[in-house]
Amino acid sequence: MSRFRTIAAVGLATGLLAVSACSAGSSADPPESRDSATLAFTAEPANLDFTTTDGTAIPQVLMDNVYEGLVKLDQNGEVVPALAKSWTISPDRRTYEFKLQQDATFSNGEPFTAEDVKFSIERVQSDAWTISLKSYMDPVERVEVVSPDTVRVVLSRPSNSWLFNMTTRVGAMFDPKGVSDLANQPVGTGPYELGEWNRGDSIVLRRRDDYWGEEPALRTVTFKYFQDATSASNALLSEGADVIANYQALDALAQFEGDDQFEVSEGTTNGEVVLAMNNASGPLQDIRLRKAVMYAVDRQALLESTSNGMGQLIGSMVPPTDPWYEDLSDLYTHDPQRARQLVEQAGGPVRLRLRVPNLPYAVAAAQVVKSDLSEVGITAVIQPLEFPAAWLQQVFTNHSYDMSIIQHVEPRDIATFADPAYYWGYDNPQVQRLVAEADTGTPQQQNARMQEVARTLAEDAVADWLYLFPNVHVFAADLNGVPQNQVGESFDVTDLSWAS
Image (cartoon, rainbow, N blue to C red):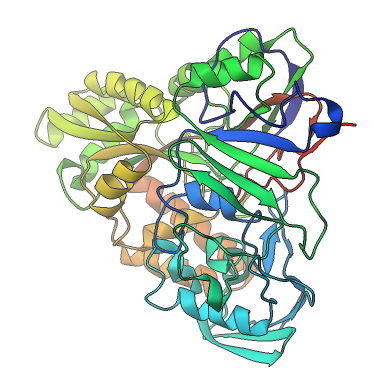
């Protein structure tokens, strides 16, 4: 479901990720000095500690670039070696033995050993980690140091998801001497280290001279943060910038045709754009109103108007790259009459708070949702919130919302619906049982149980999965290694290089 095409930049555009107007690695540089590149996000991390701060902004910058895990995901979503050279799994699927890279070091000079693996895994299980994803480490019973380069992890039960989850931030390896100031000074084994953080502006990653693995081509990579997409686009047009990544103004792509100095790649993501509904409090505790929302929103029209038809309707929290994917997009066809009937059955017109992050895709989708709901007796009051800080606090943490729109990019996060404390507020013992059985059963049982979970969630109208966000990048034609797919949490810059 991916494609690649060449385009040109002749106008202005907007995007979630954009580029700096002063990139040291821009196409205006002479070839011999092009050892830097600049990317930019609109959502700057509030701090650099993903052990205590939820959201994807931090791991997008740091995972695979600064921090590494025992394993990682390749561009096809397959688990591949990283700090672990190899591993074996016992017949009962409870014991994993990892052989480690012997010459890996942290950026503070400390060697990476099996003791660090034990420390890192046990730290996730301690009070030091507070984010919701720490539950990924619940299956671990104990960690045994066999030798400096061999570690054994014993699970309390078989878990189909544990090794995959080790590719996320919970699998990041830490040095015990490097965790005193994670919010400001990350210490990892990756090919880059934090060069400087200009708060409110940019994060600069600097290549390590002592990296244990293959050295990346670029000396520095800058993540630039600003909300003025026009300035970002002007930077690209004026050859002062290198990449617009995770491009969101998809209806403006036509403005980029005709100039072969730029290219566009479109790949797949885990990014389900979700119209979240509060199942635990407020009017949407009533399943009739949740179903009314599902019937009222014209998802195909929303896709056409907000993303130029790019992306994919999926109807569930499962992207097509997962083995238990089933297309449920036709379960609730657009039916305003049916929606109006359900609203009347639930007691008549209702007013809902639609609290969305101040990101282009969310604000654009909110306008369409508001219009569709107004036709069936539901008034949606749009309340933009600064992202990530305000949205994470008000919606994700405090659960102070009726509806929201957010792109969930964490892989295989359908399991969050088995957690009643998660911001969905969904408490269904059947789903909790199915998720548990899926994790401990055979791969075939896992696929069957997770398909049942996805269908149950859809039938309960827990949320409205608007579409799967495409991974679209606009970049200089002579910049290689821009990742086409976004299948994990990181924006991996380690393969970036300029054509000679």
